[in-house]
Length: 203
Ligand SMILES: Nc1nc2c(ncn2[C@@H]2O[C@H](COP(=O)(O)OP(=O)(O)O)[C@@H](O)[C@H]2O)c(=O)[nH]1
Ligand SMILES: [Mg+2]
Image (cartoon, rainbow, N blue to C red; front, side):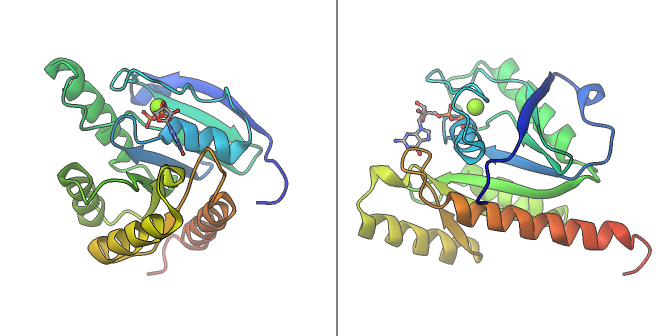
C-alpha cells in the first residue's frame, strides 16, 4: 500500500466478548511465539510502537485489535509453540486463538507467519492443517528475511512454498522487504471476502 493507513489500537481481548462486533473484515496474524507477528504488524502500519514487540516470548495471551480506518481490523493473536511457557498459560493462549478462529465470519484472511531461517516446523504444519480443515483462507509470510543472504532467503521462500503448496511472501520488518506485496495479498483477501459476504446465499 502506498499511503500509510490510518490505524489505531482498539483493545486487547482476553475472551470472545472482546472481539469486534461491527462486522468489518479481519486480517489475523498467526505464528509461533517470537516469529515476528507484532513487528510485522507495526512495520505494515509504519508505526513502531503500535503492537508491543517482545523479547520475552510466550507472554502475550491477549487478542490485540487494531483498526485500519473503516476498512478492516488487524488482529494480533497469541503465539503458539513456545515450549517454555507454563502448561496452563500454553493451553489458555492456544484456547483463545482457537476460539477466535472458529466460526469467525469477519475473518477475511489468516496470515501465517513462519521464520524464514527455519525448515518447516511441526507446529506450523498443525496450524496449516487446522486452517485447511476449517476451510479458512490463509497465506504465508516468511519473516526476518534480513537475517539471511538474498540467495538463502530465496531458497527458503521456495522451500516453504513447495512444502505448503502455496505462495510465500518474503518479508522483513527491519528492511521493509515484502511489505507492499503483503498489503497486496491482504487487499486480495479483503476483496474475496467482500465478494462472498455480499452474496452470502450464492454458492
Ligand atoms: N532482524 C529481525 N528481527 C525481527 C524481525 N521481526 C521481529 N524481529 C525480532 O524478533 C523478536 C520477536 O518479535 P515479535 O514481533 O515480538 O514476535 P511475536 O512474538 O511473534 O509478536 C523481537 O526481538 C524482534 O525485534 C525482522 O524482520 N528482522
Ligand atoms: Mg507479539
